[in-house]
Length: 303
Image (cartoon, rainbow, N blue to C red; front, side):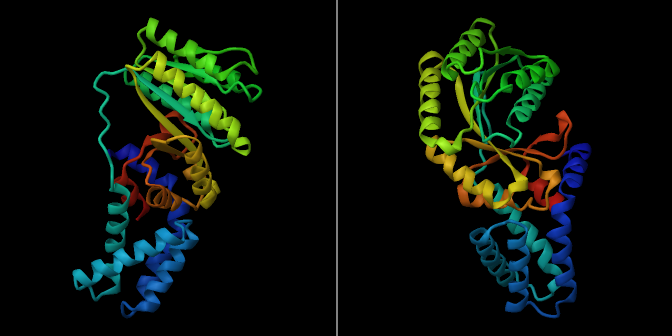
């Protein structure tokens, strides 16, 4: 991870670092020996950083095992050990993305207010800057002004958009998006969808209909479903993800607003408790502040 990106990540995680790492440093500096009391204090710090109870217990168990295996006696050596444990947990199950020059359909889901449309705009801009031909489908026809918002982003990112009237069938928008992507030979079709979690049955029906259309009309394309979550909601983001997972399979997480919260530890919790890779993180307002998630870079910036 090169300089500029890492600096952005580091400053984006400053609030989390204040709560998590600074307190850990303080506790370790005061500790005389590595004992159960020390582990209890570390556990409490991790839980209050929104890492979640189950994930915290696993981190502490792994930390104890590593400290024992490496025969560490000095409390000041615990921090690099903890960083390494967290880095390893974030890296588990990471797969290299292989596009094989295939066309790609991205289905982006998430409740209103998490930064879904903004994330789509930033992704479109990123891919466009990489020389990919991108088209957006405004399939969130349920929310007033969602298509208008997406259109503003399409202009900003310099990419095409397909949209219908408000209240029209989202699957029809995706259908037209696919036809446009095929006829214009686009590399990536990004579909914005409604996030009505409070009405899960409707959401399930809508998403399965959209998925059927993609499978039928664009079988040759690779398909990815991304769930957008707001980091400032902490453990609620994990609960939300579990609810969406009941509605459809999820391939990756986009975690927004990390720069505005001290709950950045939720990244570790999401990875560990859901076993879904975090693909992108938002560490600022700018287009370039939506970064591809780098597990090692994240651990380094956190510590």
